[in-house]
Length: 273
Length: 309
Image (tube, rainbow over all chains, first blue to last red; front, side):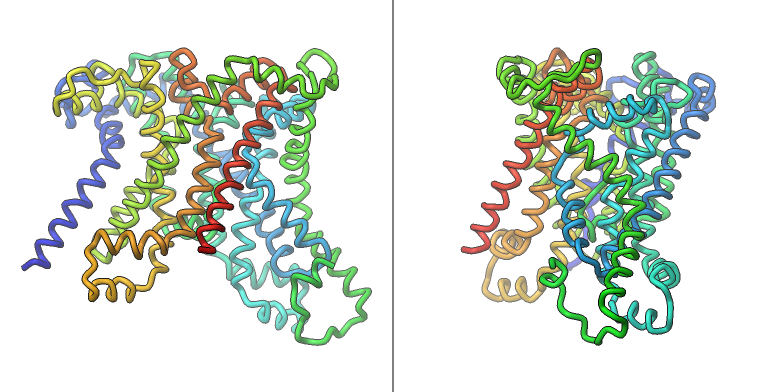
C-alpha cells in the first residue's frame, strides 16, 4: 500500500514539474489559435472559444515564410553535411593515425573552447567584409561549417573503437582512407547521428550569425523573419505565436526522431557548438 | 617527440623502413585533418589571434589602423557603458549559474528513477533547450507582460498586490531574462547530471540506509560528493555561457529598458559591428575573455584543492 502511495506521489510531483516546464509551450500553442484580442484575457483562457486554424494559413501571406524556411533549411543542411564530413574525417586523423605534432595540434583545437565566439566575432566580420561576403549565405556557411565541435565529438567516439580493428584492416591491405570509409564510418553511425542532429538544430536556431551577416529580406532565416515580424506588428499577438509555433515544429520533428542521439551526443561530449 | 612521450610504443614491430613510414604517416595524417583544419584556421584561429592584436589598435571602419598601446583599456575605465554592462553581466551570471545548476540537479534527481513514463518527462525537460531562441524570447516576453501576462496573473492570484513589471521595468528586466534562461538551459545540464548520477553505485545508498541515514543525509553525504566532477564541469560550462550571453538578450530586451540589460558581449557587438570601432570593441572582447579565463582558472584551483583534501 505504501508503495502505491509513493508511486502516486512520485507521478504527481513529476507531472507538476513537467507542467511547469511545458506551460510556455501550452501558452504558445493556445495563443496561436486565438484572435489577437483574446490572447491577453483575465483570467487566462487555456482553450480558445473558437479554434482559429486560419492563423496558420494567413501567416504565409503576411510574411514570406516559405522563403525563410527554405533559407533556414538550406543553411542547416549545408552546414551539417560539411561539419559531419570534415569533422569525422579530421577526427580519424586525430584518433587513429600517429604522426608528430598531432597532439599539439589537437591541443590547439581544445584551447579554442575556452575562448567565447563573442570575443572574435568582430575580426570575423571584418574578414568577411574585406572578402565582400557580407549579406551572403556563404559567409555563414564558412564560419560555421568547420567548428572544433565535430572533431571533438567524433574523436571521442573513435577512441572507443579498438586500434586492433584498424591494425587488422591494415594487415589485410586496406588503406587509411579505406579504413575510415569501410570500418569507421559504419561503426560510428550513432556518433554521426548525434553530430548531425546537434549541428542541424544549432544552425536552425542560430540568431546572431544571420542577424550580423544577412541584410536582404530574401536571404533571411526563419529566426530573423520571425523577429522582424514581431518588431513590425507588435500587437498581433496571435500571429506572433503562430509564427513561433511554426518555427519550433521542424525542431520538434527532428528531435522526436533522433532524441536518443541528442542525449548521447551531449552526454559523451558535454559540449555544444 | 611529443608522440614518443604520450604514446606507448606499438606492440608489433614495424615492417617497413622507419623513415618512409614516418613520412607516409605525416602525409596521411595531415590529409585527414586538413579539410577541417584549413577552415578552422582561417575562420576561428586567425580571427581569434587578430582580436587579440586589434585590442591595442585604434582602428575605425574608415581610417587606417594605428598602434595606441593601452589607450583602449584606459578608455574602458572611463566608459560608463562598460561599467553598466559589466555590472549587468555579473548580475546575470550570479543569477544564471546557481539557479540553473540547482534546477538541473533537481530535475536529474527527480528523473533518475525507473518509473514508467520517465523518458517522457526527461524529453519534456530537455526540449526548451533546443527550442528556437526567438520563439522562447517572444513567448516569455508575453508571459511576462506586466498587465495581463500569465506570470503576473498567477502572482496576483497568490496575493502579490503589485507584481513586478518585468521586461518593462529597469529593475526587473534582468531577473526576467535570468528566469527565461534558466528555464531554457536546465534541461541541457540535467542530461549531464543524469550521466553523473548513473555512475554512483547503488550500494552506497543501501549501506547508508542500513546505517539509518534519511533522504536528506543521503543526498548531502553521498549524492553531492559523488557528483563533484560533474558539478565542476557544469559550473565551468555555465560560467563561460553566462559571461558571453548575447543572443537571448538581443532578442528579448535588446539591452533595454534603457541600459538595464546591456551586457558585455552586446557592447562588443554594438561597438564593433554597428559602430565600426574595431579596436575598441576588441579591447572589450579581450577583457570579456580574460574574465571568463580567470573565473575558470579559479574554479580549477578550488576543485583541485577539494579533490586533494
